[in-house]
Length: 438
Image 1: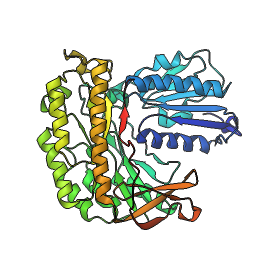
Image 2 (image 1 turned 90 degrees about the vertical axis):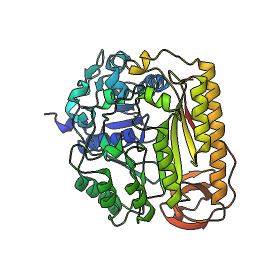
Image 3 (image 1 turned 135 degrees about the vertical axis):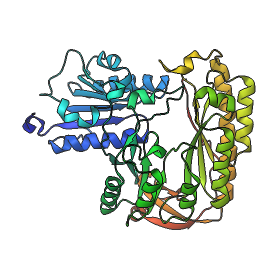
Image 4 (image 1 turned 120 degrees about the horizontal axis):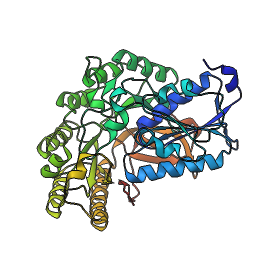
């Protein structure tokens, strides 16, 4: 047992890379360290402990992680450096080999960080604490507040899908979750703190309930009854797990926002089979049309990957044409990145970098066109906006329930408040999201 006295007056700096789930988990790590006397570093201070929570969704993400670790070590000379997250689980020795890293924690260890600390003595080489994928079984609740207004509630972790292009099941283990009772309690705690918006996060949140005999729909209904929370957003949910009853419930719920983020990945049925996805384009179309038929003003974000192995010119054109025909609001475009030990590496046809770049631009342009049409459809409508604390050039921002970003002159009294406004003109700027291997 470590004597808590060694942590007194210690200061920690935190850096999170990747998804909203990582942000929730970093917050949980921070709470553990604060309980033994470690406070968060203030502006201008040098940290005694650095915690970097990494991502490994693409080759570019790996590169960014290595750069971020080295930068944090340089900015905090002599600090005790802890690296965790998906990249740390998948390639622990790569991280341990970076001069200045002291401990590398895998997915099973990161939410019990204090148990792996010693007297904070610097190491000649990083010590690795990881478990094999089939040993990653624990679920530790995590709920974090971002630097604006909203909270991220982790409801599920891991994935059983093993899509051919993806390493997440190897990084995070099999699907697991907490209980509905525990999720409701955390939501009530957020409400007690004055929080008004919660984003439900996880790796495959629609699979919630696998380890507790409950369902994601049960969770949604229970959270909708928590007094004090104004709105929930459902983060990315697989189309085959976004049931019609969930869509119908959101349409009439008290608190769930008309905002859906659904991963498509490809609009070609042939490529979807190569990816080992669990749906086809017909099912995806049904989900989009179902949403729009009963929630016409809903925002629908869609994930797509371009340049996967097997994506010929013909299949890409199928995908582009399918997307053109859908009534979505925005694309999140990923450029395919080779991931070690994935089944996709066995697919023969490879797409060159130049073609990937061209296809990415085509879909980004399509996304801009769709988003502009969505924004135009919202002009003149009355919407509830939750304004955020952050200030940029004397302006403050907020989002409507259907995810239209709004700006107004900064006024502190508006922060974390919901105001009814009429949507006016919008800035026609590129707002599609993209991540590529560069």
